[in-house]
Each structure stands twice: as structure tokens, then as C-alpha cells.
Length: 346
Image 1 (cartoon, one colour):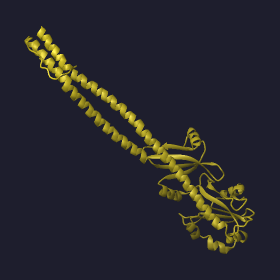
Image 2 (cartoon, one colour; image 1 turned 135 degrees about the horizontal axis):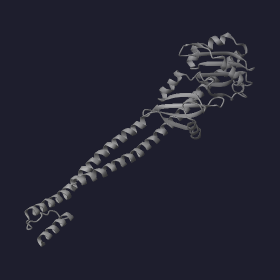
Image 3 (cartoon, rainbow, N blue to C red; image 1 turned 60 degrees about the vertical axis):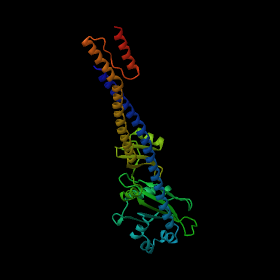
Image 4 (tube, one colour; image 1 turned 45 degrees about the horizontal axis):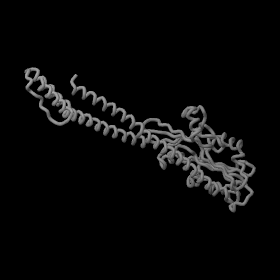
């Protein structure tokens, strides 16, 4: 094999190894950085969604206090007068304040009145009896408030087949907020697809709330353990979608699984950057190979080829008076001079 061919193969092999090593390092460094950035972004999205829920509960609670600290409501839980119902508890009133349901309980924990509206159906609907039974069963949460400032708010997942509820419980007192407490008002909103779409529109995120258990199909037991230890668990679904999980408590303190999903814009930006780096590295490596081969050929292999050709001619013609043409002033030139000296000596 000719020296020029060997040189080409060696340089190509070295540069190929260099390219593979550099691409691997770039992939680890670049995608590692973008993955960390993406995880931080998803964590921030989860935190933003939790803050959104806190704002939602605050709004519902303030709305509930507006109704429960009202003399008309105080009187209504005593006499259940029809004028209060006709004036305040119709569809348009619920729609205006964006409240799906109201339950009025008197001081004896008896249900005085309840009404539920589904805005998507634009009509009155009914909760299953299991919800009212749950309220009676958990009356220490729903119906026992020690004072005016004592309220409860949170998620309620009363049935795995039903949509979660966002509820607030406030005591019913006079408009001047004087005690004693005369009853309780339970208000809330559905966490249905319409509400989820609302959150998705303002946050550009998809959300879901599920019961948390070791047999949930969303996460393995090890992933649940990691979630409970680290607060967040982030899982890429594919190259375009990623989800993050956190644990939130319902109104009873039971854990619920909040899932927040978003597009992987940062990850794909990282892929685009990495692709451009690969292209740049490939072009650089290619020109490095060409340049190195050209330099070696010009200053080494081509001159050695001239020496070889000249020596071949001397051998063919058996004329020791001929000499090798020498150019330059380097090791190759020194080799040519030594050959010429040897020929002269012979």
C-alpha cells in the first residue's frame, strides 16, 4: 500500500474518531443542559398551575363570603323564603358569578336548599345522593366552623367516576359579621373539561387531576416514591410532549395527583442547536481532513514520490552521475542531500 493511501486512511480514521467523540460529548453537554432547562420549565409550570388553583380557591371563597355574610342569607336558612330563591338563586345569578353550585345548611346541620347548574348544558342538574351523604359523614369538615374566619377550601373528588370539584365552605352570619354562626354555605365550581380548557387557554398547559394510589396506571410505584420524595416528577412522553406530576391534597387531606403537560419546545430547540453543531463539526472535520492531506501531500508524500521516481530512473539507466532534484530546507530535503552524497561517493 502506498504511503499516500496509508496517510489518507490514517488521517480519515483519526478524524472520524474525533468526530464521533466530539458529537457524543456535544450530545451529552448540550442535551443535558437543555433537559435541565426543560425540567426547570416544567417545574415552574406546575408551580404556576398550583398558584392558579390558589387564586381560584381565593375567588370562590371571597364569593362565598359575600353570600354567607348577608342578612338575607341569614334569614333564608331560617325560613327558606321563596323570594330569596327567585331573586338570587336562578341560572343567570350563578352564571354571572361563575359558581356551579350552592348548598345552604342551617345551624342544625340540616340542608335547607341546594342548586346546581351546568353552564355547558345551560340547565339545572343534580348531584348524586352520595355527595350529600359524604357531607353528612364528614360534617366536622363541611359543617363545623368555630368562628367567622374559620373556612375550608380545596378539591373534592367524591367519586372516581365524577369530575373533581373546587369547593369553599364559609359560615353564615349577619352582614356585620357578628356571631353566633347561623349555618354554612358550600359553594364551588366543576373542574370539568370546560374549566380545564379555560386553564389551558390562559396557561398554555393541559391539566388533569387523579386520585393517587400505588396502582395508578400513570406512574409506577418507584415513580410515585420519587414524586413523594422530590415533590415533582417529570416524564417525557415523546419528542413533542412532556408531563410533570405533583401531589396536592384534597379537602380531607387525601393525596391527589396533578398532571401538567406541555409541548417540548425547549427540547426541540436543543435538538435544533445540536443538529447545527453536528453540521458545523462535520464540515470542519471534512475540511480538516482535506487540508491535512493536501499539506502532507505537498510537503511530504509528493516529494518522497519524486525521490522514488528519481531513484528508479537512476536504477533503470544505471547512471550514478544523476542526482535527485532537491527543493526546500527541511528533513525531506536533508534526506535528498544525503542520497545525493551517497550517489556521489558510489
